[in-house]
Image (cartoon, rainbow, N blue to C red; front, side):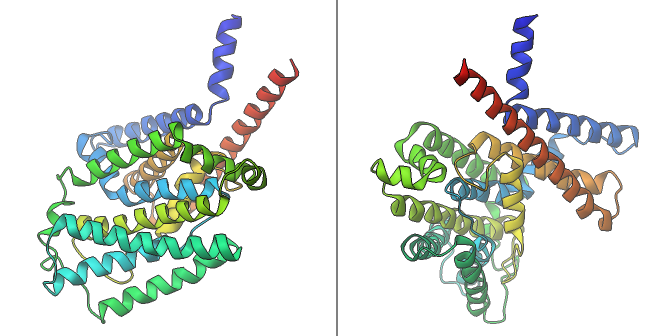
Length: 332
C-alpha cells in the first residue's frame, strides 16, 4: 500500500504526467463525441497527421521560446520574423532568383538568426526589458516584410516546387519536427550549454559568479529563437503554398501559450523539451477539436482561453506540490 501511495505521489508531482493525463482524457472525450455523433474517428491517421502538419510552426518555434523563457525573457517578435523571412523566400521564387529548396531554407534560417542576434545584443548589452525590445522589432520585421513584398504576394504557382516539401502527405514537416525535438532534448538535458541556460534563468547573478558568461547565453537563446522563426517562415511558405506580408500574424501568442501549458515558467529556470512538446500538442489538439465538436466560432476562443487557464492553474498546483515534496525531503 505504501509503495502504491509513493507511485501515485510521484505521478501527481510530475507536470509532464499530469499533462499527459489531461491530454488523454481530452482525446477520449473528443473521440466519443465524434464517433457517437456519427462523424467518424477523431483519432484517425488523417486527423493526427493534420494536427502535426497544421501546427508544425507552433511546435517548432516553441522550442526557441522555451530557451528564451528559461532565461526569464520573452520574444514577441517571432511571428514578424517569420513573416519577414517567409516573404523573402516567397519573393525570391516569384522573381526567379532562387528555386533551390535547401538553399531557401538555409537563407531564411540565417536571416532569422540575424534578427535574433540583434534582439539578443540589445537585450544583453543595453539591459533593456526583452518585451520592449522584441515589441520594437515586432513592428520592424513586419514592416520589412511589407517592404520586401512591394505590395505583391507569392502565389501557389510562384512557389509550386518549394511547396512540394510541405504539401499534405509529404514527410518534410514531420522530419523537421523530429530532428528539432531530438536535438533540443539532447542539448537541454545533457550539454553544458543547456545547463547554463537553466542556471541563468534560475539566478543570473549566481550564474555570473560561477563563471558563466550571462550575456553570451542571453544572446545565444535569442539567436536560437530567431533561427527557428526564420526556419518556420520558410516552412510556412512550403506548407501553405503562398507568402504574404501578414502571414501567421499573432502566432507568437500560440507559441507562448504552448510553452506555458507545457509547464515552462515565465520567471525562468523551469521547463523541459518534453513538457514543451506536450503543451504544443495539447494546444494543437484543442484547436483541432473545438470546430469538430460543433462549437460556433464565437465560442471557440472563449473555450480555448478557459481550458488554457485551467491547465496553467493545474501546472501551478503541481509545481507547488513538487516544491513541498522537495522541501520535505530536505527536512528529513
